[in-house]
Length: 176
Image (cartoon, rainbow, N blue to C red; front, side):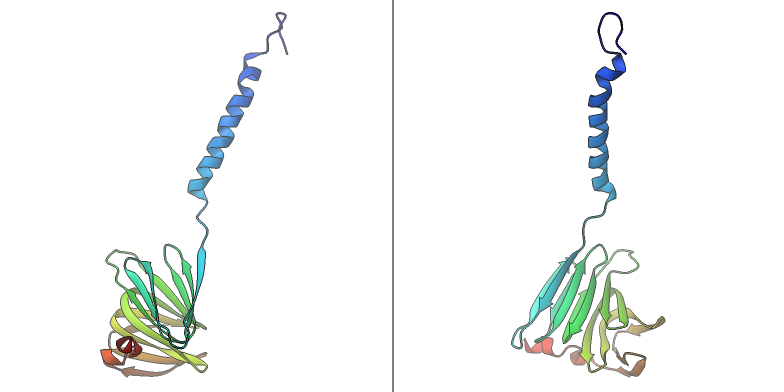
């Protein structure tokens, strides 16, 4: 309400400028609250092509010929091998519990600091570890796989376990 001299009350004078500042601060502050969008990439190699993918300085993926991979980049990247063979190298020196998650059908493979190959075969596949250790989860059951071990699986269970040499893990990498 205006006083007898015709001037606005003090709060009406500052209401819109203060409201504008508050709105700008809320929008600006939401940048720190709302996470950045996830980026999903599709990688596919042709029958005569290999591909090397660097996710972070300490995470690399190599795809064999005729392979397909979906990759989600985030703090803990996730990769889904859809077809073919891939070799994952995660060399992490931090205290993070997990650095990379690889999915093959119903199987999840969690790696912190390991080098391992994954092969998709009919109705399943195999995981072979060259360095470090990974954890394989199939239908809620966890299995730790160490260097020099290979585990074969189908969509329901682990079908075989064996010891292997480093040259047997992703042998296509030596032929490139």
